[in-house]
Amino acid sequence: MTTTAGESVSDADFLEVAEPFRREIVAHCYRMLGSHHDAEDLAQETFLRAWRGYAKFDHRSSVRTWLHKIATNTCLTALQSSQRRPLPSGLGGDAFDPTDDLLQNHEVPWLEPYAGTVDEITPGDDADPAFVVGARESVRLAFIAALQHLPERQRAVLILRDVLQWRAAEVADTIGVTTATVNSLLQRAREQLKTARPQADSASSDSSVLDDDAKRELLARYVSAFERYDVDAIAEMFTDKAIWEMPPFTGWYQGPEAIGTLISKNCPAEKPGDQILLPTVANGQPAFGLYMREPDGVHRPFQLQVLDIDPATKKVGYVVAFFSDTMEADFARFGLPPTPYDAPARTAPNPWH
Image 1 (spheres, rainbow, N blue to C red):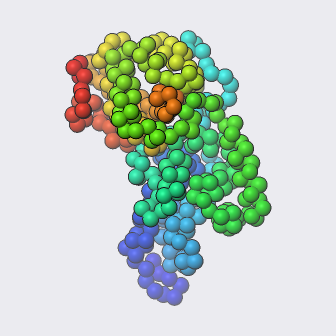
Image 2: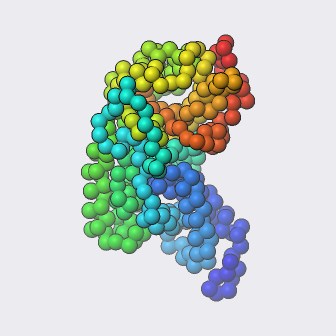
């Protein structure tokens, strides 16, 4: 790569200044698109555009800000030709009857979970602590799902102002509008987010306020209930207004009784040991890969459950159970093996494993 003055800028020079921000850029693109796969592609496009323009970068802003500007506009361009990515509860309508037949819709580009630990989805170590907390919260599934209801410019403005904490003038310069327009877009975005999705008990709760022992105990009981296939115990794990949804199935269900009925009517499991859960992290939240025993006796990837915990009740307030036609590959993205037998020994394996 060559500057306008004929000075050479090496790939190593660019990567040294830009690479530390890659995880932030992927997370930023995920907030904008709602797809981990698209986010990785657009982050790569962002770095390609940045590499091409690095020779002309004048350093009047930080490298972090410069990369986020490029990423924002890259995503805005992509959004012009893409559909929003909802969860079933974002399609409108009331909660479904759990005794009705399940319906799938593979034409909808469903919201995808985000793979990564807390450290991998937060800004660099030099970021302000308050910014780090906000960034972690801003990849939670409930927030990403709500963003999908916003037009692309409102989405960009809200992320840049409320997540990245940019000044209105910086946002205006990035997306090519006036400061007054930015303020108007932000106000409308905030208002729309208030009614963007059905209300669960823990729609915006932070499970990190639970101490580690309480969290471990709750998650252990959750795993035990599923692995014993104790539907009553599973239902007892949920808050009164808990929501369960499972794209690409179009229904969503609310309340412990409805969730229990849904599971008892539709789950392929029949007895203890038919299901095995292995822990992972998705969207910075507790998550589990659920392996179902198939007719040949082997447990294989079945669904990825992402949990939101209500710290007040110490129960589960929200679960999205993701299904796909590529579950083994999806599990691998979250560090989960093709079968649970390939996983490292767990702390307290159940006897039927």
